[in-house]
Amino acid sequence: MADLAHRATAPTIKRLKSRADEIKADELARLLNKLGSIDAKTQNEISSAFDRLVNKLLHPPLESLRDEAEQGPPHGLLEALKRLFRLND
Image (cartoon, rainbow, N blue to C red; front, top):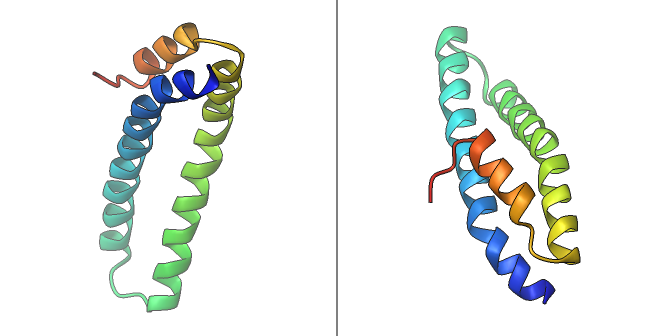
């Protein structure tokens, strides 16, 4: 049963992570462009900070979705995430 629920949530999780990565990449490019010439180490640190930020923001809702999926069909939370983050099927 949990496997079935996981399969139901996987596409939404994938879309949410993909959308977050798109936003992160756009904002990172914008910032690096504004900063101009910076060394590779600094650029990597900034990129890593953006990765950590996105991961920390997404962790709680995704953990809640996984917890709900383990208990049965996660329809309520799954639909809420789709609406909140405008994730179209």
